[in-house]
Length: 208
Image (tube, rainbow, N blue to C red; front, side, top):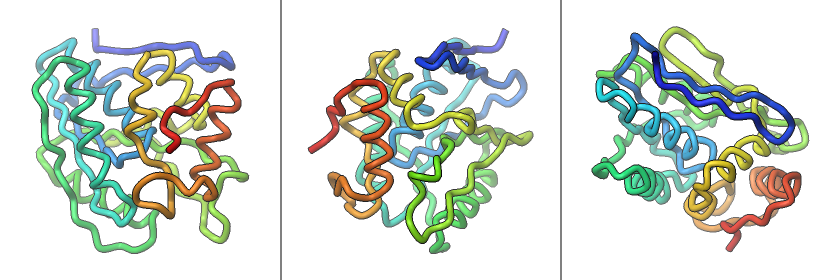
């Protein structure tokens, strides 16, 4: 039986994450944001149920503060799970468009010695799309790529983090589009995160 997690979320959405039986060399894209931080925690935790799984974090080198936050998140996850710390693998990319950056990063990571790539891309509601910027592409599942959050919104992500008592991820992660450190509390990514907490009646401990 392959490792899996099943949760019933606040709106009765059933969330399930199950590792592949055949693809055990796992890459996870860790951007420094809340979605990918949660995904890394879940995949790493499940992998510990079977020592034949190897999980490797990758971070795209983008001008969004990723390098400032990704390693702290990975360190926290490993400390929480009681395993040795691991340095993320930074992937240099040349594309300027954010969607093209993700696509380029996926191609490069899939050339690494892994056989499945996990990404944490959620469903973006129209009101949370950046003004004047195309809505981010949400990758679907393929043979060697998995996006377990493709049908979830930020509310679901916050709900899962709270249910699993890993709220430190709220403090360590970075959502803002404009400020590399901290939050502007004006951009749509900041507003999306604030909306998610308000929907659940929670206070975001990561607000500075």
